[in-house]
Image (cartoon, rainbow over all chains, first blue to last red; front, side, top):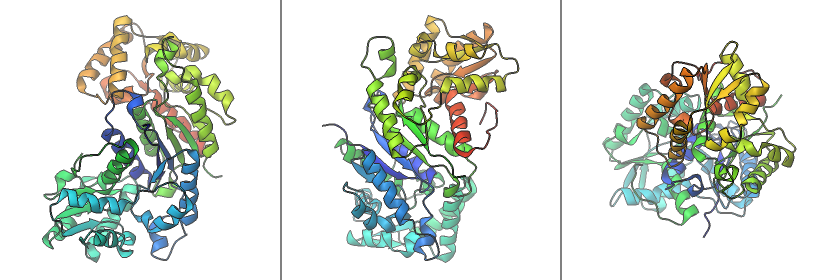
Length: 240
Length: 240
């Protein structure tokens, strides 16, 4: 059976989309160009920022998200992925606007957590303030019987700064140190694994920075996309 | 004036497309997502290999190239780039199949060479056997009064192995060493600068590997795309 075409609702932000694209290439066993998957990326960073809209103070990104999703379907995508956690606040509106499947990043992470940690009960999540406030991980993991904890308000400010830093091209070791401190607080409170619940974070926090499994939501989504496109199961490991 | 939308006829190969995407992001001055450019990438590695077709022994990629170019125009691209040198053998057929501009990678490199080297007379080019046999750089540089030289047949085999190695994900330092040897032969014959005339090569040969200017065709094309999309001139430097 021919591989399915992956549609990427991208640009949210562009660095996260680049990271997602690279992960797809690394996950695809290929000896020649033609072994790789067809991927149509609409990197549309002109869509308004998701976070302020969710927190009640910014332009609504829904029309841009829907138009971009429909554009990808029209261009030949067999299913869609959205390598942006915060945008999943608008997931239901995107799904109803297209007639192809749309993977759900939090549902994929919840499933990957069960593979990565035996009898997992509690996950620490680093994500935007909007993702946390909207309870996107709380709901998806709750359905899987997993409790979700996030940083306190000082820790949340550190995470927000890191995320918007990556969007501005800042990806230095200082940022990593502050994120490790926030992560350590979550581990001390009982988190058995840490979720990078924002697709900008893989640039500044990597598996070797922590002593517990790191669930990179962008990598989990890339694995799910390759699995769906090829029909070949992907390893459950949390590291690439 | 609003930025133009860049359409990327990609997947030729996918690693080269990834590198092109990253170069666009690095070249775009941005403090937030919305400062970045909209880029629609059709990463279509299922298009048959260009080289064997040009050398008379493989499936014709023209229908796939044309369909992908038209798909990008339909999806909203204002102009197209093709981050694959060899595919420029089919440039005229692609241009006539769409009604939006298509940048020409060799023409951009010839212009960049004049900026990089004062009174440039001779360039050494590393490219696929097909690009060299078809004289793609010879013609574009010839129009600009620049002579092009390429490796001897043993050197060309080294270059071909390096290119197809990158396509298979092999990007080690051994490959770089062999490419530096081939490059040194071109410099000894009078080349004033070296052109990476294949978009896979930036993974295995970088500016610091050589003692003369390196013109990376993928970077030159990314600069031209950002310039056309934003209307802002890009620096002529050969290094990013």
